[in-house]
Image (cartoon, rainbow, N blue to C red):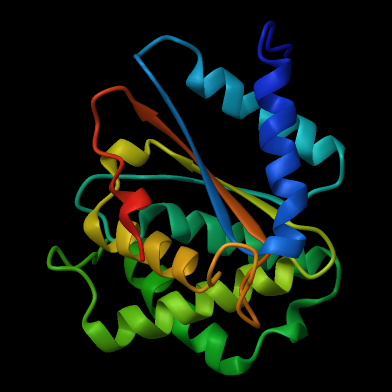
Length: 196
């Protein structure tokens, strides 16, 4: 697939991805009206980054489903580590924090009130370490599809991961070298940019 007329945007986003290894976690939001080509741009970005050897993780946001995109993202990240024989880089505590949520979702037992505070913190920390582990060699591209439909738990997790990056240009130790890219329709709230 060729994304005609979007070479400049693709190059800019790719340069942001490359910069995350030095500057920590970042986010790019692609905003536009329905049908303008946001999904096509993200598809082309995914394909180009995979071809260039970047780890690419992708998840879909679902209304009222806590952490929906991160279930797929975590599974893809674990598969990426397993394929390289690096799954042992994660601690058993991280695997324990990820397992219950994935298991409950797989069985259709998603709690409509979302996870309790303690499990939410453990899950957020485990996702951060998982992304940091995958991003040790090359920064990780994380595509958040349908971000306009993201539940509050997913949005809080993204804000928390962005907060771990520290002040601009001064990444915190252990912050994942990851670039989150989300497509949002014009007029939808872009609250992820309101992180501290």
